[in-house]
Image (cartoon, rainbow, N blue to C red; front, side, top):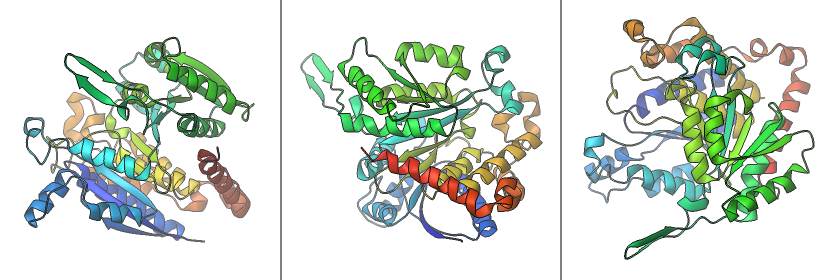
Length: 398
């Protein structure tokens, strides 16, 4: 049975609007194939919001109250990208743009868990900066980063020639990402790596205590601890050894960026930020103002962010998997944007809209996407929904 969902669309700046068009195109196709209705409501954010307010004679803001209201009344937030040219960062339109908009959204909706998958596609393995011998076993990492605590949200103060920043965590703040990590691992390769600096930091020792306690409920999942400096090395030396990596805010900021280079392009990297009432989905890359409007941006990360939205906000596992399968079909076919092509082949690169059209064309219906669903649709679909709903419920059960 089809469902109706409301989605706040925050395209933002730079390439955000043009890759968002392709993601919405794919979501519309999936909605038609599976009998759903997705109602999209667009709202301004970032530099676009600032400029729109100035044009209307209103007080400019990177995150207007009207945008927050749209988000609050929606079932999910699909976010594009924000930020302007490097040489214009001093201008009011761009100064603190990302900080004001993104931190504002994180705080408003308590977007406590950030998910960044990093996958090296075998047919694009030549784009990975690592040697083939390092990645031959396959790379598929899910980084779960706590997003609203730690040193970024602690006290920051200067006193004369002294400065300090406070890293602060509570048991409850740690449980959310750790529980999600274990639930995600159960649906993957059943291994959780908690990254910390427990040989120095008291907060890291608390992370270990909480993780060991949570692990008691997951005897089927392996738990290991790793110091952050070692983890930074292992992501480069032995990335295939990781399944689900769970860590605090600052460590996650750094390690997820390190993992993001493995696929070969940020244009392949979606992300999700899960909150109390609404979740937000966005590409991991930036606004790339230097190529904005040229029709050459890679829309895959934005499209895959839409797939994550279907999976984590709407529990539409089959539909999400259909989009992911369509993306893989297109990538295998060689219809690639320039960021995925070698220098001497970039003249044959596909345009942004061409990639979006190809993903739509490759998107199968429910039965074609999964023969198992075709054989026993009600039983299998219900089982998958139950698994996803359980993962979401467990985020807040403790």
